[in-house]
Length: 329
Image (cartoon, rainbow, N blue to C red; front, side):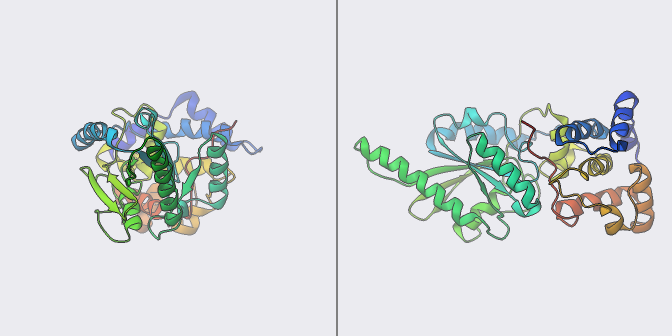
C-alpha cells in the first residue's frame, strides 16, 4: 500500500473504529439512519478531497453573468448520489425562475432506490425527472416538461402584451453527471462533447432545440470548498470530481468499507458475497482484501487493483448500487 493510502487509512482509529466495528458485528440489522452514520465514520479512511480548478471558477463567473438571460434551470444530478450532487448555491441561482430536477443514470440504482428517492423528493415539493441519457430513457418526458414550462412562460408574456419566444433553459449540474449526453439526446445528434469523466465541458454555449427551447450548456460547477467529506468521497467514487483531487487507493479502501456498511441496507443494491463472486476474494479487512485481489488479478499491483475496483463500480459492473438513500424523516 502506498504511503498516502496508509496515512489515509490510519485516520480511522480509536473509538470511531471500535464503534463502527461493533455496529457492523451486531446481530440486529441497522436502520438506514444508523447505517449512514456508520458509513460516515468508515469514510474517514478516505483522504481529504478538495477540487476547484480554474476553469470551474471561470465558468461559475460566466454562469452568474448569464443567469439573467434564462427562464428555466434544468438541474441534473447523479442517481447514485442525489444529495451529494446538489449544489449549495442552487436556490440562489434559480431564484424567481422555473426549475426542473433531473436525476440521471437511473439505470445505475435499483428500482427500490428510485422509488424511495422519488417519494422523498415529491414529499419535499419537487418532481424528479428520471433519465438515462446514455440510452435515452426519460428524455422525451423531460423535453415535454421543458416545453410545457415554456408555454407557461409565454402565457404570462402574452398576458403582458409581449410576443412569445423559445424558452431559454440552463443545463446545470456537477461535473460528469451527464449534462452534455442529455443535451445530445434532446437534440438527437451530437452537438456537444460528452464523456464519462469530469471536466469535458469547459465553456458555456447555446444549443437550439427546435422552435421551442434554447439550451445553455454549462461546465460542471462545484462548490469552492467541499466541507462534507463523506459527500466528497461519494463524488470521487462516482467520478463526479477530477482524479487530481484524491488518492485512488485510499478512496478504494474507503469504498470497500462503505460496501460492507451498505450491504444490509434495503435498496442500496449491494448483493451478498458481491466481492467474492466478482473477484474470487471474500470480503474481509479492506487492506487484506486489496492485497489478495491484487495478487490474483494485477500481479500484486494494489494501485492498479484499486483502480479496477473503482472502474467496475463506475461502469455498473458491480450491479446497480445506490451510495445514498433518502434521509430518515
